[in-house]
Length: 96
Image (cartoon, one colour):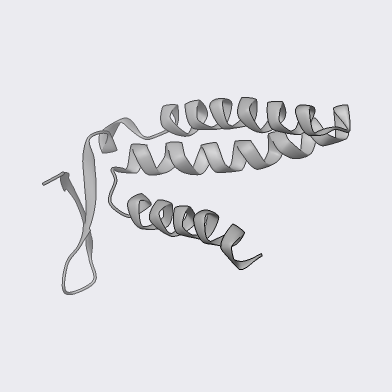
């Protein structure tokens, strides 16, 4: 059991760390994909009641969620990153 959990946990940690090093547009796309995959998986299971429907729903939801998350990024933030100053203020500037 423990060996079966190593790969998924490793991938989850890598995804969480990589999510912090991205533009707001990428972060919103990833968040939308995760929310869409979860929603699609639940909908697929409720509609089809089998594994194939659940996987298809998760895949479709992830695609739609990523597209919506990316498209809804405010235009003034595209290509920019958010930086926190030592005094706690947040600035938006071109990514380094």
